[in-house]
Length: 426
Image 1 (cartoon, rainbow, N blue to C red):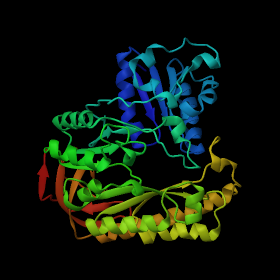
Image 2: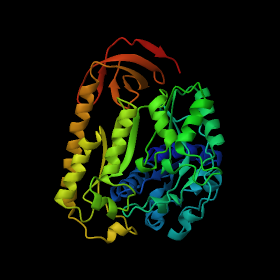
Image 3: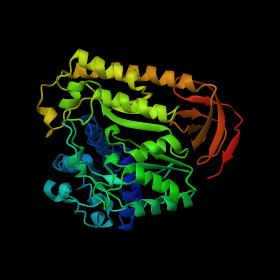
Image 4: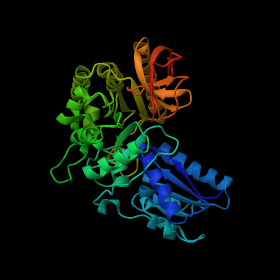
């Protein structure tokens, strides 16, 4: 192989950062290298990353293999001890060309492979400018990094550091550039995006940032949020949901559970009633909005009744898109020291929760039959509606928006009519 190949695990923010990493590694003159951008959210994510390392070495015996990302930040020695790995970079080091110029020589000791800073010492998030996301119809813009909260199950603050925000002017500048490069849709992303601005002068909110983007970049057709914590939603954000057509009617919520006792043991900042009330509020503000959520199954001390409260939350909140995580103890977190469930019970509950999610998604697909939808074409034959539902579609070029009638679904994707009503070029 030649050049730099980046393998990405985990969240949308990692997808965005991988483009920055590719650019900075090439700027540093790195060649014949594989960079693996890891995720630490579950033990399974770490296992998959290590599996990818072994596969990369097997398929590319002469390439330099660099591991970075959240799992590398939190488990640097674990990756450095792998004979297949040549270097381990932290989450700060991976985003600068200097990080790739300081790589160790082949065959050094485990300790010498590690280039990982204390992430808690990082106070700022530089505006990483990405002019395009390779192979994607929508662009991602990082507006925030890190997290100040300490949920008992979560290792991510130790991989990302404390919350820090990109100044609004830099964000708006990047959106201008992306729209100038032909993107019709931009996704705002961050580790804890709704904490945006607390560290900036004047403490602007995520909702104010989104409003400013739409006001100052009128050519932008669609603005979307990647994920939010509902308890932190501000009045500007609620106003956008209500009155701004260019703000997409889909929210993915960090809910995690539906039982008050488990939420308290998770050290979440909301209760069940808060989640249900928020979901009802946004549906009242924007009829037709779709809602998704992250939910954890099998958290320590979770009884069957508590789990039933998580199941029923799907209906009570009107959720259509579920990301279900079987609880995975992460070393160093308080939850890992709590009484643990048997893995078979956790897997069983996760499967039941996924089935509930599948039922909710089917119901969501049913409600969309007979509607007219604006669809962003992601690749030939596939697009997404404004409420983030996948559509099988035979018309339209990637990166364009077409307006079509929805005629049915195949239990996974909507089916659109063959003839679009309109098409907007990128």
